[in-house]
Amino acid sequence: MEFAPKQDQSKNPVLIPVDGPIQRTQYPYVTGTSVVAIKYKDGILMAADMGGSYGSTLRYKSVERIKPIGKHSLLGGSGEISDFQEILRYLDELILNDNMWDDGNSLGPKEVHSYLTRVMYNRRNKFDPLWNSLVLGGVKKGQKYLGMVTMIGVNFEDNHVATGFGNHLARPILRDEWHEDISFEDGVKLLEKCMRVLLYRDRSAVNKIQISKLTEEGVTPFPPYSLKTYWGFSSFHNPTVGAEGSW
Image (tube, rainbow, N blue to C red; front, top):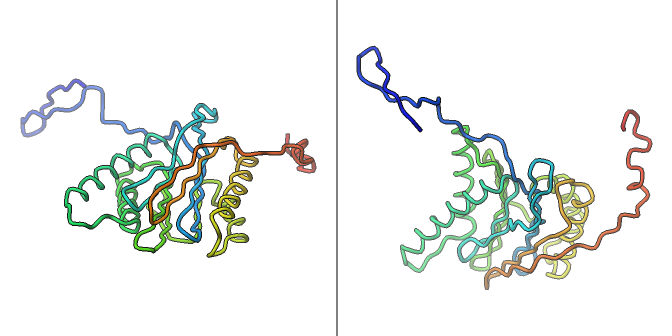
């Protein structure tokens, strides 16, 4: 960037950019859709599909949006992929600094979630938000933790959380079928059911998902796989029948 001197009223030279003020991107380009997570009997289960949308085009089909954080946490992100990568860079620095203390202690999921809420709210106040909704789950000293934070810093904890369309389409299913002592197998089936509904109803979802498990022993990411689907339902053949004024 070129700079040119400009004289102010006090005759002191001031450097300003020739091509105008600094511009920041305020619109997401490549985005991922919903993340769904639950507490189960032994820890945390988290699921997300692997689609990356360039606008309304499903451009990428193998985007991982679930990442382990430190020893005790698991992070899932929806929204702008490059902003999610920036958040992962922040967390890498946080975990590295924590390890450098070498005091036998390590950041738990509650501390990481608190840090993320401050980061998101801080960037929102600068009118330069990180365009993501985040799910943070973890297990430390036998205590399970699951929370989420939005791009403007709104955050909460719950036994099951979801971002994007999952907040509207998956959480009603979770409220009906989730229970505190749900097993690993039943938890996976419940997440698959949620992801299948999202695939049917969310145009940005793809039929390739990844599920990760977090227990006291650590993170276990399972290989991506495709869901079995059925598109023969009568409502799929003519979805706008009876909808007055639709195409």
